[in-house]
Amino acid sequence: MSKDVIVTQNISKTYGKPPLQVYALRETNLQIKQGDYIAIIGPSGSGKSTLMNLLGCLDKPTSGNIIIDGSDVSTLNENELARIRREKIGFIFQKYNLIPTLNALENVELSMGFAGVDSQTRTKKAKQLLEMVELTKRMTHKPSEMSGGEQQRVAIARALANNPSIILADEPTGNVDTKSGDNIMRILEEVNKKGETIIVVTHNMAIAQRAKRVLRIQDGEVKEEHV
Amino acid sequence: MFRDNVKLAIKNLRNRLSRSLLTLLGISIGIMAIISLLALGEGMQQAITGELSSLSDVIIVSTGGNAFSAFGGGGSTGQYFTQRDIAVIQRLQGIKEISTQLSGSALAEYNGKKTIVSLTGMDIAVMRLQYSTTSLKAGGFLNEGDQNKIMIGYGIAHDTFDADISVGGRIKINGEKFFVTGIFGKQGMGGVSSDSIVLMSSRDFTKLTGQSNISLIYLRIENVKDAESIATTIQGAINENHGRKDFATATTMTSILETVQSITGILQVVLVGIASIALVVASIGIMNTMLTSVMERTREIGIMKAIGATNQDIMSIFIFEGMLLSSVGGIIGIILGVFGSQGLTLILNSFMQMGGSMNLTPVITITSVVLAVTVSLMVGVLSSLYPAYKAARMSPIEAVRYE
Image 1 (cartoon, helix red, strand yellow):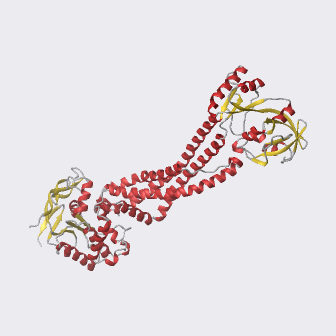
Image 2 (cartoon, chains in turn blue, orange):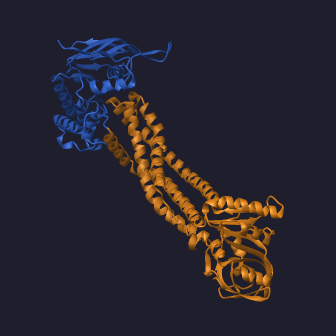
Image 3 (cartoon, chains in turn blue, cyan):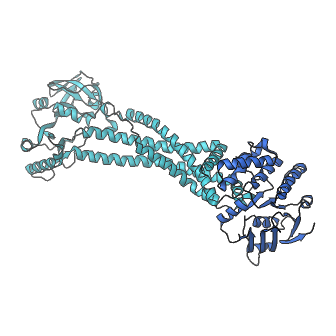
């Protein structure tokens, strides 16, 4: 029986004050286990990004609790949340979001640097990760010198750098062609097979159907779909 | 993390090279101004105090309430010392030498034009001492034993008579012929007293005018430590002779030195103050560059926060950038300051015509270099503090979404 990596207890996120209060997410209860591969789907403005931001500790819920790896993160301060993001979560964004002044290797090393990993260890690890995403020949290239697919693979390597227990991918194939998109999903699935929890937000049903679980969000309410 | 921050800062500054270089130039100019002006101020202080401290055993007694001016002057107030005053001084213990400066006026004639000029007579040794800081334009000082020889100021040589007077020229004073052996350079900003001077030996003065109007008394004392007490005694005794409390002022070189030091000290503070304006402008430049950088890198900041950077990490990245800019700018500024101070001195020397023994040399002290480095680092930290704080406070969600 796998342990719970994320548990949400009645989390809600609202913007504004009554009577103009808007619910971005309503009393959501989720249980995400180690090794889960979850797709979150829903129309634009349904609350997908809000849920991702909350699960990724980029934002705090208005009410309810989020428990990551056994500890309640809803009450933590900014720096403690940064530590959780650094140690437990790996982000993959739709627009890759690599640092433009750094090359592929340095981009992967960056988050390890924030975690205090020494220079030699992180270079070795970054090289291994870039090899894994088949970018051995692109290590010294800057993001502007790489294709969308390659940049996203660097982003995957970066997300894995600090051995997180959860990978959050926001439309990871949204900006790449079908072949690259398929390659990216294949890498993520391989990572999932090694025991990593993967949560993917997507519009693409074909991508969603590759997941083990699908969560549909509509007007801030999350429902589990059976695939 | 220190090395990473430095590496990151270098990469970011290189990525915005022209802007970084312009900001760097700003700080360099600020530091250059501080170094140059401090060097100039220090040079000025050392030049003046160097001259004066060699005269530490000298006391100058002048008439009137004002202290003697150290710069080639010696005010004639129309009141003169008497032989009784001299006798009082001669009776005192610890006096090595007494000498006087005589003042009067006479009718001078050159090339057919006659005019009244001020005459100053003094012992040759005293003359050399008093005018040691005044530059000579031509010729040389009078020598002991010289008779019917004079030194004249620039104004007498060029502006008083119809024709210019040169060294070797003959001027008739009260009907007697005098040869010009030396002409002082134009004083300009340095002082005006020697421009209209006609200087001769005491013996010639007395012989010519039949007067002995003593306007200044120079004393050399045996022990420098006694300077202040002897000066007070002399002042009191002469004042008593004349029945007035403010007839004479006895000034020691030590007190002149203190006055000069406090004046040059104030001058240095003013100079640094002026240079600081350049530095303030430069630090605003850094802040501007950093704020622009923070805005341009909003997304980058969001990404870094998302992948685990704390507020402190973000702040230190930007503060390092500011410090790097300012410290490199500071080092360049110090190097430019070394050359700048030489250039400034050359310009000042030629403007003020402070040639001869009073040549100004810039002095760059360790203190001013340490001060420049410290100030530049502080400027870097302070001016990047606000941009760094702004960056650190950014919400990672909004920053990541920023286009």
